[in-house]
Length: 348
Image: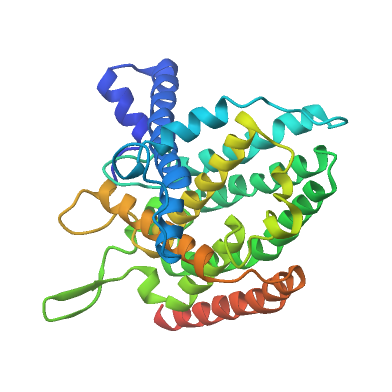
């Protein structure tokens, strides 16, 4: 039997029943999940990104504040939050204020249905996979809103690039995920993870689990590439593209609002990693260590892959990005779906 969602566990431990128990359990559970993800995003952004990039370029990176520069995280937070919030002239103020919050909100909402192991699973609806794709796409609205509201041509171009790119790669992403649904026979995230717990094959002491990344490596590769486009990592970082459009949709943002955009970027990287882990890497499954530890190790592994792409893969032109998405990824995603349907039909 699958463990109860985190909110139910908290309610039972506190001994609170009824509507009040549901409210308290839900809020405390959401706080636990959000805090865990925010801590990892804070480590990834100011610190690990610099360290990984430095290792690719034979540099040392941050090392002046604290052991190995680890206190750079706190120093950067204080530095950015202490800056003046500069509001450009003629911005569409309500939309300009709302945009960074939409980016962060869309990512944090997505973690609600990701099973993290050891009972850390906020909600488990039957259509959990649909939900996580729906809420994660809200980020595109935040990016284009920020670009439009900033009254800056570079911001506007960045926002339009973000929407065009996300539409071009969201469809292959969803279609590829549909091939996983054909194997699992469900849209419920916990059931998709449970479907990967069997043994695929074993060679002596080596046991290979039936993770969908092993069952269908082509779909796994497609999803990883499409995810790079969704989170704006090389070669698909055109919405920001510093040498083209300054900083894209976030050009006119500073202080706390810039921090929100920056935080939202890394939250979305970890959300994409969480989806990949649940769909292709067996979720929190793994030997010896607790499930939550395996889940964290897997999403950090995906994070390292995105940073490798950022450091090692050159940016491509906007027309090439759209051509790869519409003429390449979309065709391959539907071909994968058709082949998967045939295989599942034959096996069934």
